[in-house]
Length: 145
Image (cartoon, rainbow, N blue to C red; front, side, top):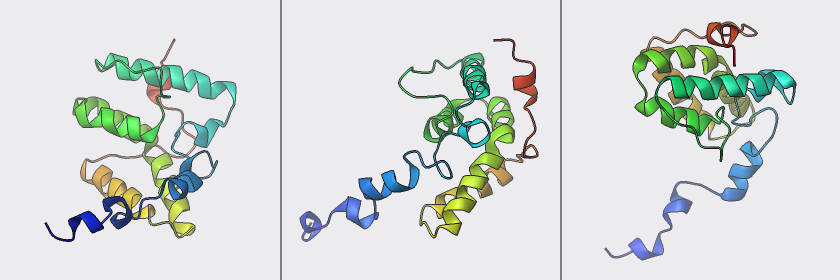
């Protein structure tokens, strides 16, 4: 294993916490909190977050209070374990938001845009049809809280 100790795997992946923070921490154009894209800090965002948490629970999953349920990495992790019927419906609601983040990262020249391209291809292969921008989700419209 000569030379392995001289290599830094994080450097090989071009991962830098400062770079990551700069692109995602809470820049309104590229943050990873999907409901922020449409609601910002408005009251409606809180309602959508509660509905999203209820959606996870309806699929049999408990959501920690340590992270908001619209955080993309949490959502993707949930999708890896949830039944396809739940994931496809959720993806239809948020695929447009995810695509928009990827487009903004691509416009900024970010290497992270490639990850979002891969997500878009995966969503397409799953048969996800994103809701038109500005559409209320059927699930949210029927949510009584």
